[in-house]
Picture 1 (cartoon, protein in one colour):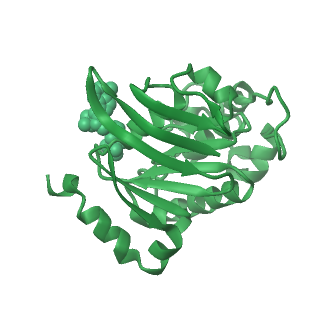
Picture 2 (tube, helix red, strand yellow; picture 1 turned 45 degrees about the vertical axis):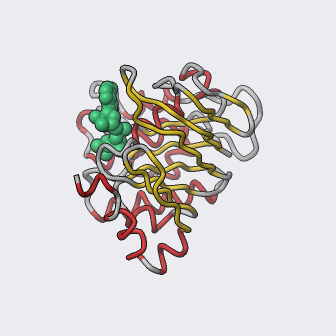
Amino acid sequence: MLRVSGLTAGYHGGTVLHALDLTVPAGTVHAVVGHNGAGKTTLVHAIAGLLRPTAGGVFVDGQQVTGRPTHHIARAGVGLVPQGRRVFAHLTVAEHLRLAHRPPRRPRSGTAWTPDRVLELLPRLGERLGHRGGDLSGGEQQMLALARALLGTPRVLLLDEPTEGLAPVLVGQIRKLIVALADDGIAVLLVSPSPGLAAACARTITVLTSGRVTDRLDGAAARANPAQLHEALALAPAAKA
Ligand SMILES: Nc1ncnc2c1ncn2[C@@H]1O[C@H](COP(=O)(O)OP(=O)(O)OP(=O)(O)O)[C@@H](O)[C@H]1O
């Protein structure tokens, strides 16, 4: 379970994220939607330790990890799939998988992720093991970025715009993977500008506007009435700017 309490962060003395609270229970997806510049990536980076929060707390299964170095937060069970995939252009898929495989130091509930298990989930990567990251399609790079995060056997998975730039058929595949990973017990925090993706897989949806929570919706209600989430986003002040 991930809990974020009063999280405040920004750059160069300015505040971007204002006292944000959210909870992601194990086995569920919590989506944070917002327009460009709303602070979604800032939130993910402040949780993962890439940006030091100026106030508030980040807790993983009750353990406080606020402001700790990224490797400490990763060891505490947080996996990050960054915006833009960030795969190494010159390393092969097999090399990525080998480098990313970090068996958990302490036993965790559920089965640890190994390269073989990842390839069962993402068989396309198995067909591309000898290909370099830079030669993969956008969808394959996204799968590889997901594989890297899974190989740390995360309890919390942070997905930063995982369908950005992907064709609709791939968006559908990613959506199914997100749901499958949550069903496997992982707490998934999905940040995305896409209300459709959020509604399709989240139990809870937070609307982020200029770094503040402006709405919180039940995912099932948003699925039943998609207009509700579209309205919440359309009313967000950033949309009028
Ligand atoms: N490294 C940085 N230095 C200074 N300002 C930054 C930095 N990164 C982001 N910002 C600013 O913080 C605000 C929030 O940016 P952030 O990337 O978190 O938004 P986002 O919701 O993820 O948007 P996008 O969908 O465009 O990635 C923006 O005003 C942005 O310009």
